[in-house]
Image 1: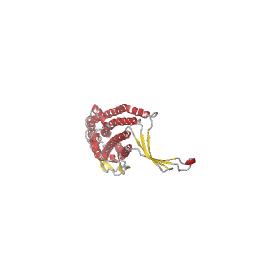
Image 2 (image 1 turned 30 degrees about the vertical axis):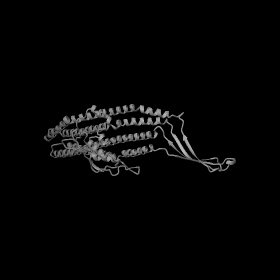
Image 3 (image 1 turned 180 degrees about the horizontal axis):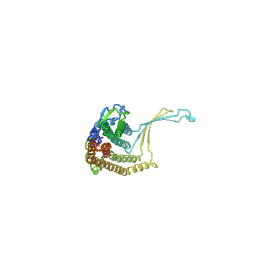
Image 4 (image 1 turned 90 degrees about the horizontal axis):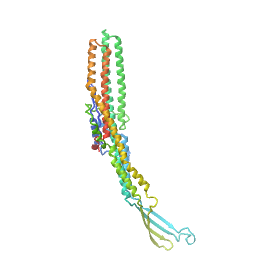
Amino acid sequence: MQMSSPMGRERCAPTAAPRLRMTTVARALALAAALAVGVAPGARAADGECEMTGGAGVEPRGVLTPRAAAAAALLGNPRLAAHSCELRARDARILQAGLPANPDLRVEVENVAGSGVRAGDEQAETTLLVSQLFELGGKRARRRRVAELERELAEWDYEEARVVVLADTAKAFVRALGAEARLALAVELEAAADETARGVGARVDAGAAAPSDLGRARVARGRAAAERRRLAYERAGAFAHLAALWGGAEPAFTGVEGPWAEPGPPPARENLLARVGRSPELARWETERAERRAVLGLEKAGRVPDVALGAGGRYFSDNGDGALVFELSLPLPLLDRNQGAIAAARARLAKVDAERAAAERAVRAAVTAAHARLAAAHEEVALLRAEVLPAARAALAEARRGFGEGALGFMDLIDAQRALFAVRADEIRALERLHLAAVEIDRLTGAGAEDGR
C-alpha cells in the first residue's frame, strides 16, 4: 500500500520559517510501502504457525527520514502483525473448507445376550460397515469459494490497516517535524532575548536606560528559556508517539529530517471526490458483494440432501457364513429445507448497496471536511507569507533602529520581537495543519494505493 503524506523539515533561520511541501514525504512513505510488498510485516510463519515478532529489529537510529519511519511502521506495527496472522488463519480455513467428510466405520453385533438359543453368542451376527457421506449440490466447492472470498476480505482489512498505519506514521512525522521546528524557533527567540538583555545591560551601565528596563529584559529572557524547555518536552513526546507506531518503547532516533518546501495549491475538491472509489474502505465492497452472493449460493445448496453410502460384510456365528451389506442413507427434506438460512443470506446480500452507499457518503463527507481544512490552512500560510511576515520583519527592523537611536523604548523592541516570532510560530502551526489535512485526504482517497499492492 502506498500512502501519500507530506512531511519534512528545514532548520529555522532568522529570516525564514520552516516550510512543508505537500506529498513529498508521502511519496517516500509510498516507496517504503512498495518495497515492503511481499513481506509479512510483524509476523513470520514456521510450519504453518504464525509467530508475532512485535517490533524487534526495526528500531531506526540517527536522524529519522520519512522512508525509514514508514518501513519501521510496516515491519513493526502490532496491528499489521495481527492482520498478517489473520491472513494465515484464513488460508487454513480455505484448506479446511475444501476437505471432504471422513469415512465412517461402524461395527454392529446383533443377537447376543438374549434368551433361549440366543442366550450366548452362538447366534450372533457381526457386521463391519464403512460408509462415506457424499455432499450434493456442489456444497464443498461453494464452501471453499466462500472461504476464498472471506480471505479476500481479510486482505482488504489488511490493506485498510496498512493505509491507516502509514497515515498515522505520516501524521506523527509531521507533528514531530512541527515540534522540532517550534523548538528551533524557541532556541532562536531565547538567543535574541539574551542578546537584547545584554544590550539593555550595556545601556544601563552607560546611563542611557533605566535599571527597570534591564529587569524587564531579564524577565523576557527567562520566559523565553521556560518556553524553550517546554517545547523540548513537547518534542520528546512527539518522538515517543512516533516510535510507538513500530512498537518502540523509547525513540532510538535522535532527530527527524524531511523536505520543507513551498506547499503547492490544494487540488480541486471535485477531483478528490472522484477518487474516493480507490479507497480500500470502498473498493472492498465488490468483494463483499461477491462473498454474500457466494454465501447465498451455499445456503441454497443446503436444501439438497446429502447421500451416505456404505458397504461391508456380515458374519453369522451359528454356521460361519458371511454376506455383504450395503447401506444408503438420505434425509428427507420435509420440515427443514434451510429456508431460514437462505432468507438471512438474501437479506445480507440485499443490504450491500445501502451499506456501500453509507460508507461512500461518510468518506465523501470526510474528504470535503479535510479539503476545507487544507484550503483554509493554505490560505493562512499564503497570507502570513505575503503580508504578515514582511510587515512583522519590517516592524522589528524599525524598532531596532529606533531603539539604537534612543527614539523608541525597550518595550517597543520587545513587542516587535515577540510579534515576529508569534507570526513565525503561526506559520509553523498552519503548515502542520495543512499537511495533516493532506495526509488525511490521501488516506481517504487511497492515493498511490495501486503501486503498493
